[in-house]
Image (cartoon, rainbow, N blue to C red; front, top):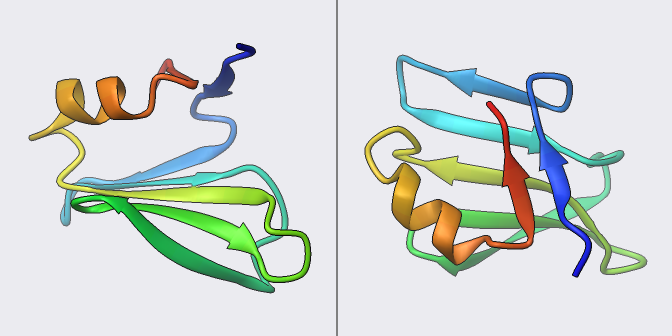
Length: 76
């Protein structure tokens, strides 16, 4: 499996709300699916391709989130 890298180049951390937003593409035509508690995968409405992630309570649940999303390499 090829890992997709999550870094400061394609993400933004909101420290006040402990939310990590990750961007892989244009999310202007996207919908979100909650795949795990507080983990939202943003998908393009037309292609169903993943265009982003929204991770609630990121710092608090970092280890659990990383195990759930093992296809992503977090370097943030």
